Length: 173
Image (cartoon, rainbow, N blue to C red; front, side, top):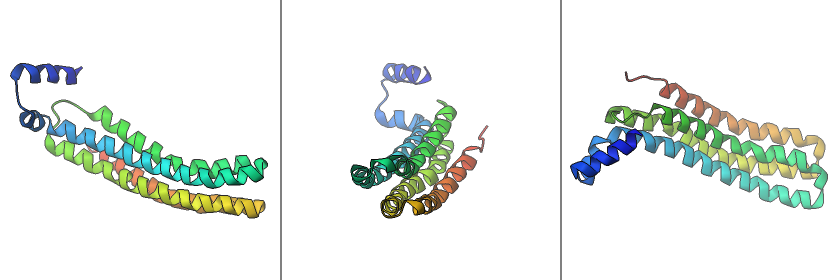
């Protein structure tokens, strides 16, 4: 609703784009942070899940009974996308039309840990989980070790997620 009001005022004032961006720089930077966290961690997760899916599909073609164990490995890189989505929601709930540029930049910076670490860790976790699927194909009794290796990569996404949450808990009021 507040955004609609701003657009109506924008049209009435006949302000140019540079004035619009200057007056709304805070909320735009914060929204950009939410989009960056959601987008980068989501793309990383999609890439990671895709890497594992390609390897798992080859295994399932030969041994369909190993589907459940390979699915666990495929789901692991998807969690980073969820972390980015949660940070995006937290930012969305903080958006306000009169947000200062300083606050907007701060929120943008708070989104960067999960955006960057979420992307990287999801891709690398996908590679490790794909190796876990190969382990499952060769020796089913050792498949839990493949899951442990993949979960180790998750640690760094969790650390980035916690840092982003802590940074977003700072209040500017």
